Length: 324
Image (cartoon, rainbow, N blue to C red; front, side, top):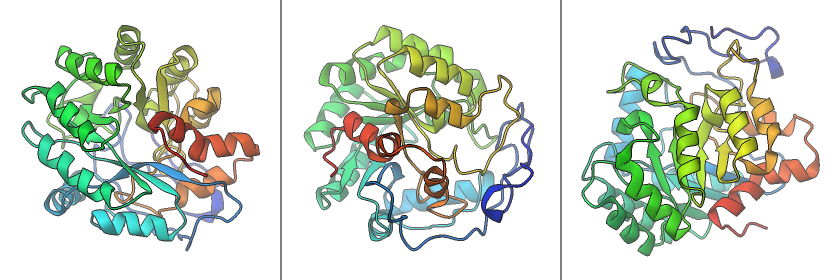
């Protein structure tokens, strides 16, 4: 069950409790938090790369926010692409990895062109391509996207309705492995929602991701949200496989809490192999303060090397960034 944590940190509202784990975290829409936000990142932090920022064309962003209003949580920062990047830059974020995804076949080329144009205007933005499993010639779409300067690929099992080991993905995995391009695949089971056209609990499993890691040892695969909610499974995978990365997005913010079936909280996953874990936020699609998660990271007591690795080192290695 999801439940509030007694004595939630920083005297703020407790984590959200609205659904049983079997129903999924988004069985009902979740409320937003009116928690305080900082004007800038804490000065004592090393350089920060936000490896999980979303940008979309305006109409698609607005449609996404309507979906969240109905099925997810209230979006606190309703900012379009340039505003999103300006907001984080003004608050001290050194570099941003911009992600997006195609909700249906036939969208990817236009979306890739849009994010490539945005990224070309900013030295501190690395944009990632997308493709839909049902697109014609997905490998060709990716080759064209990489020629535009995009780096890596973002896919979303819940939105695009595929399992990680779906045969439709084989040409995508093969192309990325051959070209050395990383893949970011939302393959964790949560958040499950009736607003999706498929059941992610039926599609997603750590074992299905493991099948991909085994089949494509040259593929650099990143699973966001620490594989939420299969923390124990992804801890095992990241310890075992050198071609797997994880990002922290929304898992360290004390917005959700779970009675962990296997006794594995998110921090244990993060600490299992810290050189393979990236800091990310999901900005701007957040129900709480933009710096909620990084403030908690800063208070974890990580040594200087581990903190720098989390906040920029792992992302720099995965995406080939130069962040001083």
